[in-house]
Length: 98
Image (cartoon, rainbow, N blue to C red):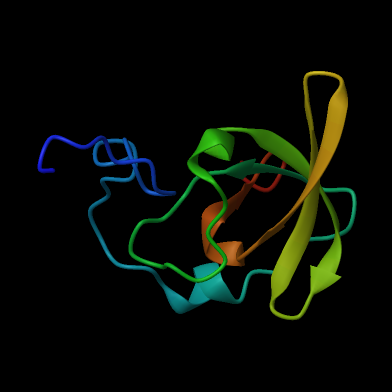
């Protein structure tokens, strides 16, 4: 049974999640306002609050908080989705980067 195809949540993500460097405290404690636009970029060194790999690279809006994580909303086709994502996997878009 060694030729069986992997179908788990982390399947086909070896190169997509490859990242150098460590996570900082500022990334974990960042504050995002409701309605702010963020990019979902999965940080492979932090496994808590990780979204599914199909949302890696997607742009979403912050809806609110849920514990230490953020609830973000995005549209996939005609349906809207809500994800609970740790702040380590979110990067602010817009005037915050300048």
